[in-house]
Image (cartoon, rainbow, N blue to C red):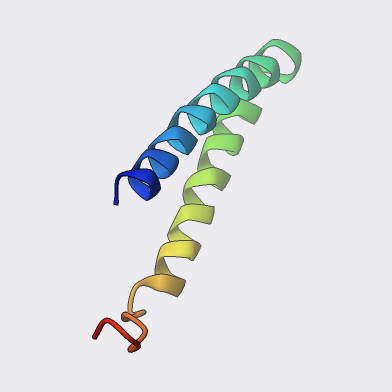
Length: 64
């Protein structure tokens, strides 16, 4: 169980690094408005993904 949790946790840091660099680039080149749109679109993406997987249950198989 430690590997999957560590793998997911590692992607959190990768996402934070990409967001920091991407936001900085957008702010430097296009201004704060585009960075705000970038953050809002990211939040809407997460909302869409969460609504898709909200009611997904465990797949019955060998361990259930």
